[in-house]
Image 1 (cartoon, rainbow, N blue to C red):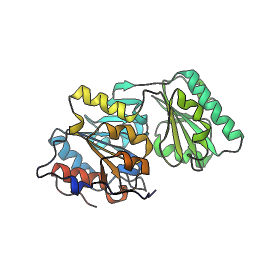
Image 2: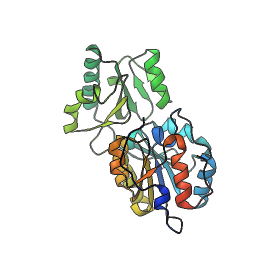
Image 3: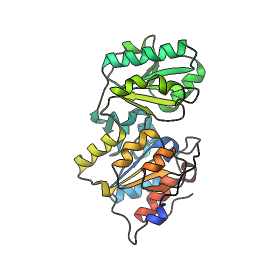
Image 4: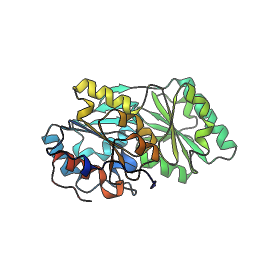
Length: 290
């Protein structure tokens, strides 16, 4: 969704005389790399090939599950680091680099809170996100259609609190504006856990140590990459911490106002191929399509 904002430096304003020394490119998916119809941008695979040739690591960082990201990037997945489930699960070439699962008692408490909301008339459902699969109890077509957008691996079960899996987060989908209804109802969890609005209709509950920024910083340490060599793109509230992990932090033109205030620079919108256009400009690659 578009927002009004104060001007920030654009990629054109930020371009130095020589290409920037970027070693790591991290991008959110929905509302950032993907357009509003959830399509990957024109020229993506060519840009990824050029980044690989230069030794630049490209890393999708999303609230989506690992299986969904791996399928999306299958043509270029080798060597790519996937920051999945809002940073709670980081995988490279099928090997787990890090994870931050919830305690089962917390999962149960959150799910019971969602069940009470639904019983009270809120049109909301829970997605319990495990390493192997996502799990849902709600079975109506409208809800499952939203689940399928982000969770390739998902199962319908009788009781999501009884599944045998490491649970990384609980994601809640509210058919209304989540910031007005479901998110406030989960306020009591904020004292001990991350409660992050990740989209107009989504809110995620995770461990307090889990976020995309923590995953990016861990990756930087392991690879010897500095914030000055890191380029990050985001549009929503679950991207805030990872913007802090990069000196080259870009909010999309369509981003939430809080994201635009937090970022150092502004990229064109997700519908204008803002990520690839900015990457191409800063690294001196052939211009990506707008």
